[in-house]
Amino acid sequence: MIWYWLVASIVVWLLSAACIIGTLYELGAGKADLKKGDFWGGIFFHGATAILALWLFVKALG
Image 1 (cartoon, rainbow, N blue to C red):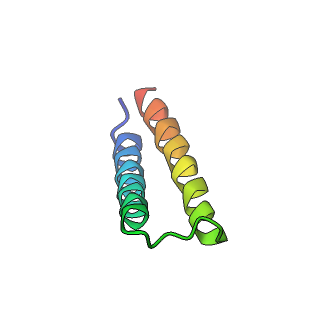
Image 2: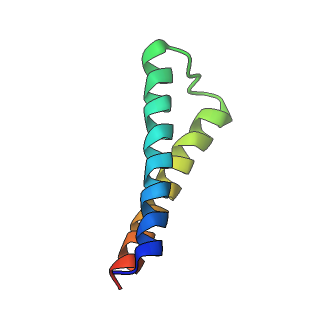
């Protein structure tokens, strides 16, 4: 296992998870406007970072 790819995948995953939790909080609090582009941009960002974290993890496995 290549440690620096593993560290990178963990960091990206933690940032993605924090962003997802923040978005869920906004939805629960009623602060998210589903018609605005910034909300859907965040949803796209979550997916992109999840794919990136998975790719980094697979790269770490060698």
